[in-house]
Amino acid sequence: MELVDFSRTSLWVSLASITFNPLFWNIAARREYHTHWITALFNGDRLKGCYAIAVTIFGLGIVRDLLFNHALSEQPVHPLLLSPPVQLVAMALFAAGMVFVLSSTYMLGITGTFLGDYFGILMDARVTGFPFNVLENPMYVGSTMSFIGTSLYHAKPAGLVVSAYVWLVYTVALRFEGPFTTMIYSKRAQTPTPSKKSSAANSKKKL
Image 1 (cartoon, helix red, strand yellow):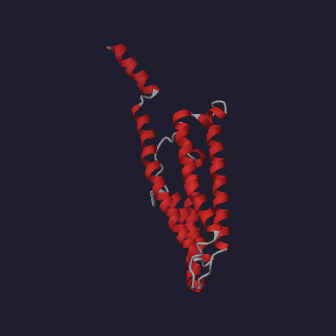
Image 2 (cartoon, rainbow, N blue to C red):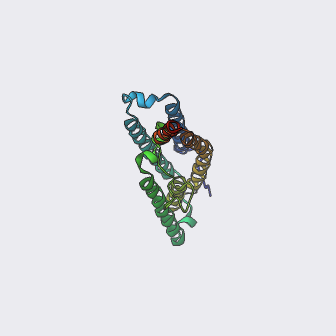
Image 3 (spheres, helix red, strand yellow):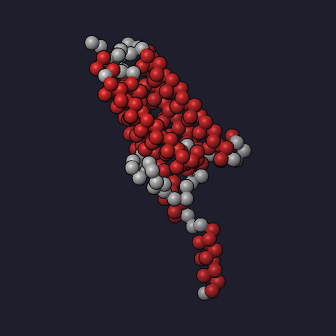
């Protein structure tokens, strides 16, 4: 029995979309950080710029999911994955994955979720509540769980292969995103705030 039909163009298109999305947002966001090219498109309004890339990333995510589901529709079904226990696991994984994704977005807000720090819109403090007190990267973990759940629900082994690739792409993306985000917040920590500057000036006057 064939588990994965690699001859289907839809499978490769789905993999290409999964690869493209994080590549796009990392390149676009880093260029914004260094040149403010998106902010410039909105006459210097960085909030509108951040919302624009949020809509773009969200739209690309919808396209990615549609392509993934289309690819699954053309792949072989494995009868063992149709068993009730597997189907229950599938639904549980999908539900839990969505909880992680949606709760992450709720806790971070639009700008926190969609690269606001690259626009200079920084969070006041690290988010430590659920789901960040359970997972370090709940959005990526949750997304991968949803891919796995969908694949199991449709009984498609090919979907599990794609899901493994999704996690690989996210893992690579994190190697770039994590250090860069840390650098952004480190620079803020090294920059004196206006209150600190005024305090320093007052101290000099007293001397």
